[in-house]
Amino acid sequence: MLSTTPAPAAWRRALFRRPMAPHHAFYLVSPVFFLVLGLRVIQQTKALAAFDEGYPWNAYGHLVALQALVCFLADVYTFGTPDVRWVLLDMAYAATTVALGVPIMTTRWLYGANRFGLSRIIGLWAVAAYAGTTRTLAYRAFCAKRMDAYFFYHACWHSFALLLLPVVPFGDE
Image 1 (cartoon, rainbow, N blue to C red):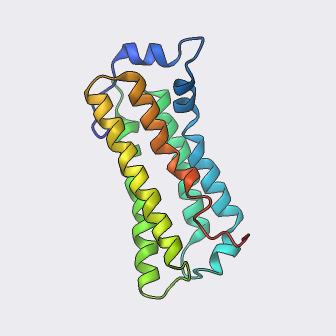
Image 2 (cartoon, one colour):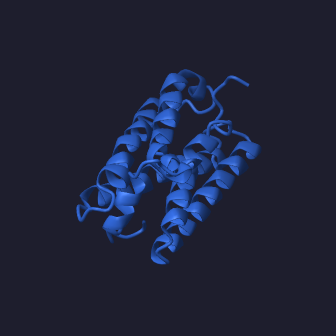
């Protein structure tokens, strides 16, 4: 969601109903995608420093990994409740981690501070476009009260973290 409007309580009940629909399970596990990316960045800090030694890779990896917890609390734990504190924090936190990612890495590349190469920068922006598109589709589905589409597109939005794995230069190519 791009607002603090709580989801209908019926959506919360549907989300946790058994047997679980595949797109509901996809939504419930999707915060883990940030943990996967964050841990990979932490693990590969030295390899990433070979591409950009001035960027705080270890700190950034920890920020992205922590996004998994914030995202889980906002999108799963308090989903469908009137408690919007985690949603507000998630929105601010996600905006910060994204801003520290693609735009800053692109700017650093333009000024010669990193050696990502044009193809990686294009890849970063392609993933950013995917993230923006799926986020917009999730928001539209929410506004149209299309619950299943919302769960699917919101989980797709979270999956951008996994799509970054082949784009970020981890030094293992």
